[in-house]
Length: 184
Image (tube, rainbow, N blue to C red; front, side, top):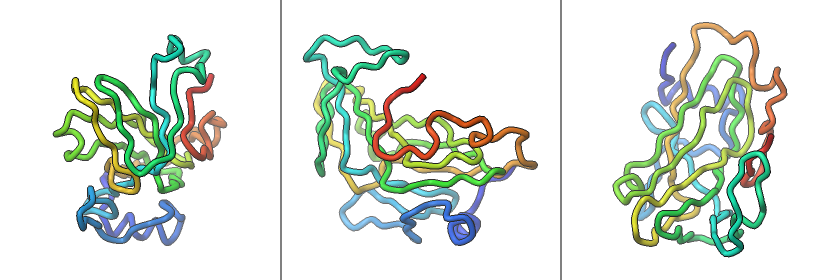
């Protein structure tokens, strides 16, 4: 297994439309950086957020998820309440090749502010907008900036193709668009 470099990622974008829209080099200019990096791709968070709230005293149940658990916001700056959680999505749409597994890590800028970004692995032949989970671990409100960097994706090339891919098993989050809630 090997980690793909910037040139390999760029080639996959041309051949397989791996990432769309694709930013060829890191963008910074008063923003949290995003775009192609040495061994990964820094994706942006969109302006669609689902902020968890306890207004209606809903119980978070992954098998029976209630719409009362959050409020929707379309905004350029999302305020995450103290010790709370927000769902969002990437600006970029990903199409993962059959011999690639993708791991995501949060940006250090957010991590140093107590904001943790969690994403499960992008499996071979999965595609869609990536749902991002932001946790504010601080006792203070925290800001998330739309259309700026949120996390870095690392692309791992397998030594052979898997016997069964996400597409083969008809994964429940295939081709998701927008912020996608838990499914059974």
